[in-house]
Image 1: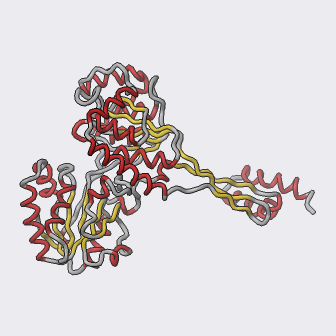
Image 2 (image 1 turned 90 degrees about the vertical axis):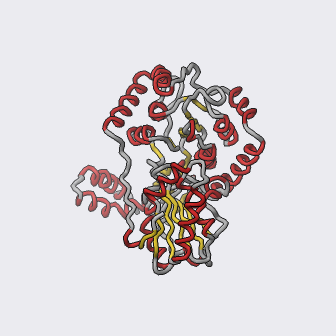
Amino acid sequence: MRIMDANDFSLKREVEYGSPEQNERVKQIIEDVRVNGDTALRRLALELDKVKVEGLRVSEEEIQAAYQHVDASFLEAIREAAVNIRRFHEKQKRSSWMDLQPDGSILGQVIRPLRRVGLYVPGGKAAYPSSVLMNAIPAQVAGVPEIVMVTPPSTAGVEGINPHILVAAAEAGVREIYRVGGAQAVAALAYGTESIAAADKIVGPGNIYVALAKRYVFGAVDIDSIAGPSEIVVLADESADAAYVAADLLSQAEHDEMASAILVTPSPELAEAVRTEVDRQLAALPRRDIAAQSIRDYGAILRVASLDEGVSVVNQLAPEHLEVIVREPFQYLGKIENAGAVFLGPYSSEPVGDYFAGPNHVLPTNGTARFSSPLNVDDFMKKSSVIYYSKEALLRDGEKIIALARHEGLEAHARAIQIRLEKEGNTRG
């Protein structure tokens, strides 16, 4: 793992827009589903997933059968994680409000849940039951009445779907599940088919085809984000345990070859110790080839003169995950402006947040923590402004409204107010 001065480091990622061929294929798939509905979904499952699908919807019997294929320890862990996630997101709920003005006017905001949300869950090697909880539970807390899940069919698992995914969905309260994946699943959620009703928003990770499809349908339907490769930055001083730091860096490097794992430290001794530990631990990892390439291409140990300089570097990187392993971590929390999630102290390892603590693990990537937030309850809500103007208020403010409208050259706007002033003004007092 390379050690270098922070001033010499630059982590520049291009936003992944896919190749022209990939974009064209996604467009073809989406249009196919828009025109041909379920027929296209079945044909594409056979063509792309090599699976013949008859019934698109997963039955309740299949969901219950999945419980026979997971062990008790998994079920216990997923249930307790769900409780923690729900408890955390319950604190994010907001209510509608109305503000009565002295003149009798009422200004307010009505907050409502979205009607229907689609959750995309990858299949195969990228099947993550924890992501089911992280996407479904905030939507439930928001009060979304319809949550539908799509996941690719496969020849493995229970009736073609990973049983751990089905159990996680059931534990999160999701019972409407369809065996369809890829860009075609995104199209089905965006535009609807004979079997799958259109959703108002699509959330959840996927491969490049899923990402491009979400980008393509955005506007017809809302999406969460176009997620980039995973990132972790560890800000540490000489008090940090090199083995802990190395293990946490590798926990993200194993995600994929483009994940980035970066240590920022003012301690030369820690830098050398972590480099040695990364090499030692890497040799024993099952996914060592993936992690090794990630470390080689996107990993680094950055030297800084002080922890304050380290905080400045962190804010420039705006990482998805930030661990602060220093003697007084809370001393630096207020100085951190850009990070998706902040893990404080030596025992707050990043996987604690990924799986169990309760905060959402769907986080802004690719430096977007500068302006984006973790997935939260507000992402599944919509807001409407409420304006009730009394006669007194309109008579008081009308001329000012007219002046602004005429300044912008919108005479009909002005006259909509003026006609009321002329009529109501005559009855005043």
